[in-house]
Image (tube, rainbow, N blue to C red; front, side, top):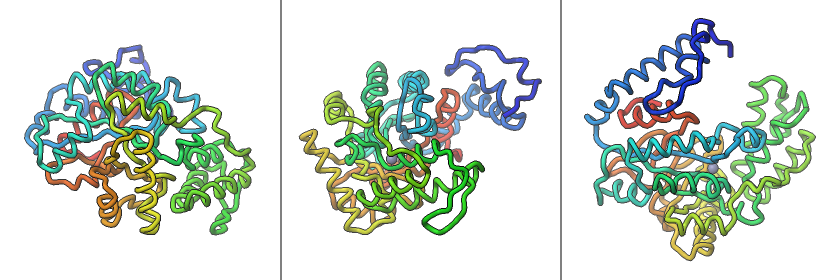
Length: 366
Ligand SMILES: [Zn+2]
């Protein structure tokens, strides 16, 4: 991206924070984007957006995180920066939550949705999907400094032998492959991998296919893709996923541990018997590890939509879950279905983070 010189000449280091002018407001964007940022900034600084929010019914914001790393770029080929937050930014975000919002837990959200409990305005819950080890080693210590308790949803098939979910190996295979062209073994489509749009389409097709396979078939498909892309088989040298001890550590520190299925499929696109296996086995495995009942669940959302429906809501209730979070944008209000809680995406910078929460509370679209 090229920067207009008019904006570039104002470039200088500025501290980021709730009351500082975001650096990306003055450098790094085209004029249209910069204008939007100025409008957002005015709404924040003037308090107008908080006024909008105070006129609406109070809802709870649930934040959706995945991985928090000291140096996200180190694992760019594996996890990918799209779902990673840097530890420094995450710390700023937790500080802002503790100072300007009201951190709550998913147990509070459950009571709020069922109209059993009132929650103060500006309530925010923090959740993590997938079960990355950095949740325990990087994120949880930062949250402890600000007295924030979160919900950590673990993909139990990754606990032992500590292999990451299938989409990690597929991402790495597509990012690291040197092949310029492939013909899809699924439908014969020819993809030019050195063309970004084709590369993305090939990756999406591969993920869409894998998202409905069972665990053994996933392993076979990943191996097939790696061979096709001439990439050596993925070996987890990073210790990406949480161990049993780390899961226990989160539980005994007062955090909620929930299920994110066994094998990270798209549960809305698989058979009812397989949904039950994914819901029940992940629940019982975590209950074995923790010796405590597991009642919170998070729907994986790998590519295909919808990622939940009436059937998955009914089955998750029958299995014994009391809340389930989704990737659908929005807040939770009294009377909402607690087994289909909306969440919001979390940007990896403090200025957009504050805007995301404030605008969600005010009912603005994402
Ligand atoms: Zn996930």
